[in-house]
Amino acid sequence: DLTPQGKEKLLHAALGLSSNQAQRVFAKAIVSGGGLDERKIDMVNAEKKQIIRESGALEFFAPSETMNDVGGLEVLKEWLRTREKAFGNEARDYGLPSPKGIALIGIPGTGKSLTAKTIAGLWRLPLIRLDVGALFGGLVGQSEENTRRALNLAETVSPCLLWIDEIEKGLSMGGGDGGTSMRVFGSILSWMQEKTKPVFVVATANNISHLPPELLRKGRFDEIFFLDLPTFKERKEIFEVHLRKRKRMVQEYDIEKMAKAAEGYVGAEIEQVIIDAMYLAFSDKMNQGRDFNTADVLEALKRQVPLSSSQSEAINALRLWLTEGRAQSASFTEKQQAQEQFVQIQL
Image (cartoon, rainbow, N blue to C red; front, side):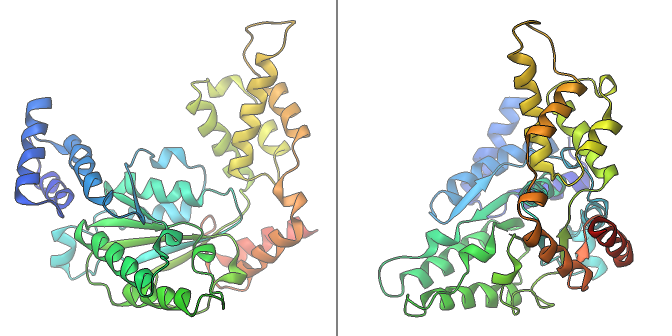
């Protein structure tokens, strides 16, 4: 029971499998569920896990997150939605090239890694994480060979998403390794520029000062997005996401009051605030069994020091990078709006 688009997605999911492997997983899907439909794509991707495990530098993530798990970032979400069908035959017949990738730069805890997982869920593509540190070996030439093998394997199972997390740490070029890190870095850069297989690269970074300029030039990525401190509206959405995640009724909480009190908090810190509030209510011996409420969340907010306060200099340096026009805001449609918000917070 497959639509033409569903059939195409299922066949794309099977790319990288041998004929016997594909036949086996299709038969398994039919026996387990009575037929072939788009829901069986996850089963096909699970078969790919066996191939990915052969490489120590690659890790397979089954897509489980959706856009509803990410609060805010509307510009980035819209950019991703417009390219949802970019890997299909229809896009190719139209003359569109496959997207190359995006770089997600910004403040720690703003959802860069979560966004990478969300893309895989939205596009129904396997997500493969490249562990750059695992590429390096002790023998001469081993690191370069590991790099080529990992990148070739990513192309074998394409179309897929290749996630390079905290790329500035993995590709920091030191001078004490005989130039190995530079050669590995050069191999990855050349591959990103010249690859023809539909491998969409998602690179995340926190410290832009460690990123070489040749990495971020046009041609490596389709777009560079900056993930800033969440706005008031985005903080409301983030609170709602984490309340629903814990099966709580959003209308039972004062979202406006909580979002206002959480100014300067990033998404990861807001999630921790919810968890801390749950512990406060759970350990309340006077009212055993009560659920956490808005007061508990506000109390948890008072006890936590956000990164925007403890690392204000580093955060301001990152945000200045956006106002200089080096990236597109993941939340604002115009750079001017981001500049105005930056000035308001400075004041």
